[in-house]
Length: 164
Image (cartoon, rainbow, N blue to C red; front, side):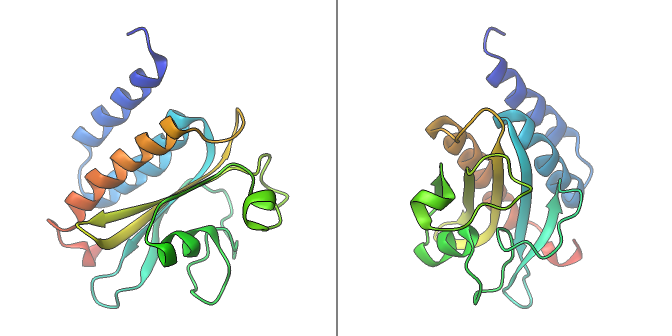
């Protein structure tokens, strides 16, 4: 292939095709998506079918801690909560200039993607990507992450998510 971007997407698709179970699929997305779009961090939240709340199910962070950039409490300001409240995925190139959030020390850049995972119009989860290594996220990055989000949304409504 002449396009390394497409090669990385193809590698992700192959890994997903051989994944044994939903937990492995989620871990694969959290592991591969940063490599595909040149990001440092990825977290994947899935709606708990019993409580209706979003729960962290996969990530590639070394020490995730209580980071407000990925915290799901509705009372706390976060990019993910902005996406949920606006019912729309968000691409942020500079969190300080665009939305007034202070950049955390662990992030080298101020870029962030929060992609809603939906089935029809109901939010099933959120895919977060942060710290694009080569600068800010692009529309192509957002499109690729959104495609993965659409596929996950279709998957989530067809399987039992209560055991992950």
